[in-house]
Length: 146
Image (cartoon, rainbow, N blue to C red):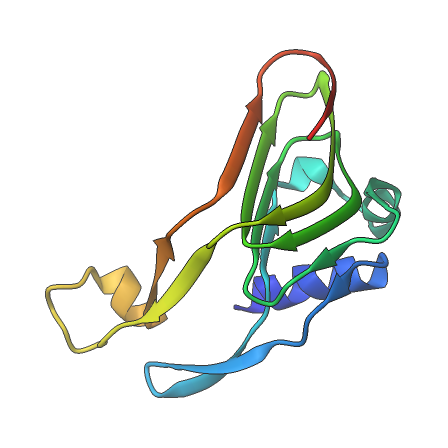
C-alpha cells in the first residue's frame, strides 16, 4: 500500500487531482487505500520528468488502478475512474486523455487463516479482483492518441 500512496502523492504534486484515500481493514489492520498507481522506472526517474508527462487537468478516482509501462506515455486531460494499463515500446509516443470509466479492479479482503489461499495473499490480506479494465499495448513506433 505504501507504493500506491507514494505514487499518488507524486502525481498530486504534479497537478493530478486525486480523491482522498479510504480506510479498509486487511488482516485486522486498518490501512488507507489510495488509487493503485504504478509505473515502470523507465516512465520516469525524476519529479521533473513526471511533471512534464502530466498535462492539462487530470484526475484519478480513489477506486482507480493505473499501470504505465513505457518511456513516452503522457497524461493529458485524463479523467480515470476504473482500471487502465498502458504498455508501449520506446519508439511509441502515447497521449492518454479523456474520460476512462469502467468497473475496474477491487480489493477483496481474505482470511489470513485460510490455508487454501496462497501464502503471499494471506500475508497481504487481500486479493485483487480484475473485474474490468482498459488495456492497450503499443508495439510499433509512432505517435498515438488514446
